[in-house]
Length: 92
Image (cartoon, rainbow, N blue to C red; front, side):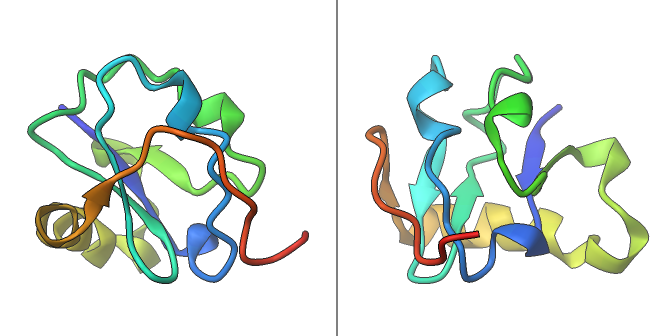
């Protein structure tokens, strides 16, 4: 099982979640973060750290954001791993 970063992350890209990830499975895209599904150990450490509530267990991704499950898998392969906190794109 894995977790998925969904639409609420788009355009804000908070990185509070990456510093608590024990396996470094977050990847940084231009406008949002992605979780690599084969690296995520389903520990849920990242979920309460997300200030915009953008991280969901793959079985609980809201219907309107189901495409983000495949998007995370695809984009994580193309992006660089992120392990340190950075300034967000948006100040919400």
